[in-house]
Image (cartoon, protein in one colour):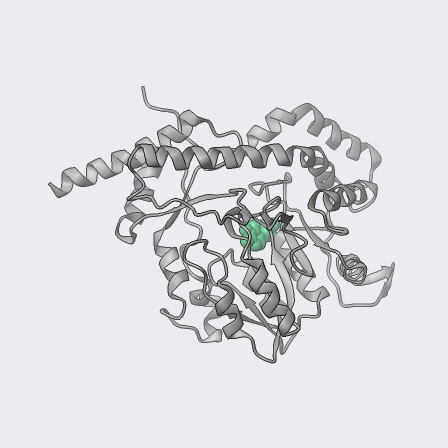
Length: 382
Ligand SMILES: *Cc1c(COP(=O)(O)O)cnc(C)c1O
């Protein structure tokens, strides 16, 4: 009997578990005829703000748009520099460039994959307007030193919390660790919508008011435009689904953490830890494992990925090419070798299946397939 496939992420599991409530919420919204913004979005914003501990949450059309709104709100524009990691999802840097500002890359800490605060300090100039700490894979950046260097240089801290809703640094949730934060509700994130959706959080009433105007063409009063804004609104349907799911996020995060602990223990018990380097959670942080990312020797990475795919085990490489080497950023003039830690990560990482509902048996299957790959390699070598 061939073992059942193990998906990288099973977004249908949440829908199946909450189907009656989600279906009812969708029908309720369809019955109101309110398609965009409105009471459903306002209710979600209140509930989401309360759950992150931020004073204000502003719903919007995606995590990418949340970054654009947040950067625009703090005044990023042409002539400005914004410090970002090169090892992140593309949108972190593209949002900066789309506002006419210059993404300035700073290398990562090879252990956590997050921005290295000393590298941030080294890249500050008199043009630096903001820094974007990306809380990658579910773990917060080292925010103490990042906030200090930002404060010393009057630089805004714009968190990219797209992968880390619920993650904590020093007991405080991301979303309030800087002046403003961007969240994504892309279906595979810790809180997923049924399409594109996002949110910006802040404790500043001025920034919140600007965000609310920017997402509706820069107007506070309809047809009167204070800013050159965008159409980046949140749909009522997405908000209604997000409201059903939001109370379940703490349970899902606990399940992700438990699954990560099981992987850790199983990798140790099967003697795979010399080959699969496990993710490192810093003691002052709560890692919520949006992804469980391991490192393997670069010479093995791509063949192991192929072996997992051939064995119907979900796997993904986040991310195969550092952003400073992307074709669209060639004009910035970076070269291979500029960011050794980020570049090494792009050659060594792979993400194993991770979602709240993953079972111990599924995880055992994943590691069986990895062990099978190693046995095959030893045979070929012998
Ligand atoms: C998903 C993601 C985004 C973008 O979110 P979308 O909702 O897909 O636009 C931005 N930054 C990071 C780190 C992400 O993982």
